[in-house]
Length: 181
Image 1 (cartoon, rainbow, N blue to C red):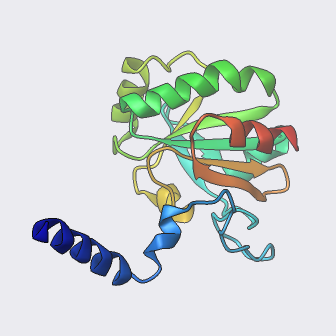
Image 2 (tube, rainbow, N blue to C red):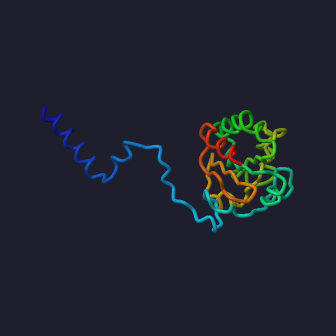
Image 3 (cartoon, rainbow, N blue to C red):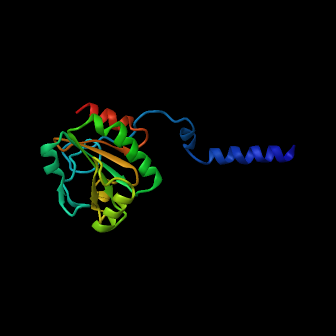
């Protein structure tokens, strides 16, 4: 009995000493991200997306704002070519890309390091002949500009506004962002 009371006391003291941790035990669906200044440039939702020019896996230069001249939006998905990224990419390719023919979808390879290595990853993962373009972020400039990591999905409107930036889950947020174009 003494041991049970001692364990209960330790657990109670641990919870009390965590200051505010109990909020994490009752999650809400509220979006608590700070609102970005729409006049500023950056990779946060609500900001103007930073312009960039990077190589794709075919060695061509791809410029964001040039893409937006001929598309209603650009979607960037940051991939490491892992099974989770492939599952997300496959889901997007099957469920979202066909519904938005005027949106340009890019996988952003920030792990391969070079155009030939990224092309090899693209081919070996089955994305050589798909609707996805693959951008080679060899200097991690896109990763830094958009504050991205594995699975980060960014939607940029024709006007250059970042409409959505979050980790890919089930595609619902992406579909909602694209539906409002």
